[in-house]
Image 1 (cartoon, rainbow, N blue to C red):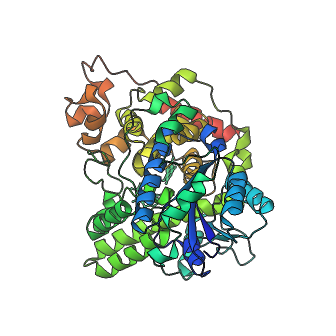
Image 2: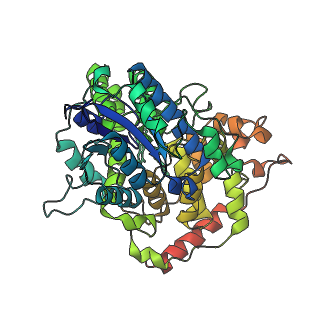
Amino acid sequence: MQPPVIHWFRRDLRLSDNLALDAATRSGQSVLPVFVYDPAILRSPHVAWPRLKFLLASLAALEDSLRRQGSRLLFRIGPPDAALAEIVQQSGATAIYANRDYTPFALRRDAAVAARLSIPLHSFDDALLVAPGDVLTEAGKPLTVFTPFKRKWLTIPKAASVDAPTAAQFIPASWIDALDAGSAGTFTQGIPLDRAADLRDFTDHLTISVPAAGEAEAQRRLAAFLSERVYSYGDGRNLLPAQSADDTDPSTSFLSPYLRFGMLSPRQAYWAAREAYRAAETETGRSGVESWISELVWREFYMHILAHFPHVLERNFKPAYDRLEWRSAPDELAAWKVGMTGYPVVDAAMRQLQALGWMPNRARMIVASFLTKDLLIDWREGERHFMDWLIDGDPAANNGGWQWSAGTGTDAQPYFRIFNPVSQSQKFDPDGAYIRRWIPELRDLPAEAIHAPWEMAAPPKNYPPPIVDHALARDRTLAAFKAAGG
Ligand SMILES: Cc1cc2nc3c(=O)[nH]c(=O)nc-3n(C[C@H](O)[C@H](O)[C@H](O)COP(=O)(O)OP(=O)(O)OC[C@H]3O[C@@H](n4cnc5c(N)ncnc54)[C@H](O)[C@@H]3O)c2cc1C
C-alpha cells in the first residue's frame, strides 16, 4: 500500500467541511485518521469532567462515522510529539494535516510536533470563517473593538464548505488494527472513558449528563434552530428559558458545545444562516438571523483577541485595572458557586451550570456581573469556575465574556454600567419560570415575589437572604474602579 498522510483531529471532530481533512484527501494518498490524547491536558486544572465527557462522546461519534466509511480512528494517549513520531515511523506517513487552534498551549504543542518530525505539518484556519491577521486596521493593527471588527469582518469573502471524504480516501480499519497491534502502551479498544476518569479525580462532577454528541446531532440542532427559532432570536435570545437546554430546545441554538469541539464548522453555521435569511418572510425574521450571525462574529472576535493578545488569559486586557483591588471573600465565592447567594436569578443560573454544564448567554452575563460587581471578586475566579463546569468552555470566548462583564476587557461595557440582579430577573424571567425550574425552594412563590423573596412578609425559610445589598455593593464597586483610575 502507498504510504498514507495523517489527519490529526483536535477540536475539529467531524468529517464534513473539514479543511485540513479535505486537503489531506487532495494529496492523492489515503488518509490515516488519528486522535492523540495528551495526558498533560487531562491532568491540567483547565480540564473539566463535563467537557471531557462530552469530548469522549464526540470521539465515539466520530469513530462511528469513520467505521461507516470502512475506516476507524487511531487513538493514542501520550505527548503528541512522541505519539505522532511513533505513528509516522510505523505507518510510513509522509505528511500530517491539522486544523489550527489559537491558544498559547496549542501553538506550543504544534511547534513541538513540527520540530520533532521530519515530515511536514500542514495547518489550516478551519475553526474560524476569517483568520486572525485578516481583520486589521488600515495600519495593520488588530481591531480591538467589536463593532469596527464586525464591520470589517462582514466585508471579507467567506470560503464555501467542502464535502466529506469518500470511503475510498481513508485507510481501511484492518490496516489501522495492525498498527495498533504493533504499538506498545496505547489504548487499542474504543474510547477510554473509564480510564480517563481514573487519571484524575473528577468526583464533584460525575453526576452531570451531557447531550448527544456528533456531527449528525449538530446538523440536526442547526436545522431545527434555523427553520424556526432564529426568526424570533432578536428578542428570544435574552429570555431565560424555563426548560433545560436538552429537555426541549431553548430560545438560542445550543450549538456552542458543538462549535467548541468542531462537530459543526463555522462555515456550515454561517452558510445555513445565510440561507435562512433568504427564506425569512418578515423584517423581524431577517433581523433575527442577522443577530445570530452577529453572535458568530463575537465568537471570531474573541478568538482573534486571544491570538493577538495571549496575555489576556492571565491579565486584564486594560492594564490600568491591574491596580484594582478585588476582595478576598471565600464564603461569598463559595455561595456564588453553589447557587446560594439569595438572589434567585443568580442562583438559578449557577445551579443550571452544575446540572447541565451550560447556561444561556444572558444568565452568564448576570452571574458574571454579580461576581465581579456585586461581590467585587476577581473575574479570574469566575473564569476558572466556568471552565470547571462548561461543556462549551472555550478559553477565548470564556475569557472574553468574563473580561467584558468585569469591565477590564477589550470592548468592555463601561464599569459604571452594573447589572441590577432583580431588574434583570424581572425583565428576562418575568413569570419566574426559569427560577422555579432550578430552585425548588422557590417553586411555589408567585411571580411578584419570586425575584426578591426577602421582601416578602414571610420569606421561605429554606432559602438564604441576600449575601450582599446591591445598592451598597454598587457604590463599593464604583469607588474601587474609580480608585484604580477607571
Ligand atoms: C461570562 C461569559 C462566559 C462565556 N463563556 C463561553 C465559553 O466558555 N464558551 C462559549 O462558547 N461561549 C461562551 N460565552 C458566550 C455565550 O454565552 C455562549 O456562546 C452562548 O450562551 C452559547 O449558547 P448558544 O449556542 O445557544 O448560543 P447562540 O445564541 O445560539 O449563538 C450562536 C453561537 O455564537 C457563539 N456565541 C454566542 N454568543 C457569544 C459570545 N458572547 N461570545 C463568543 N461567542 C458567542 C457561540 O459559539 C454560539 O454557539 C460566554 C459568555 C459570557 C458572558
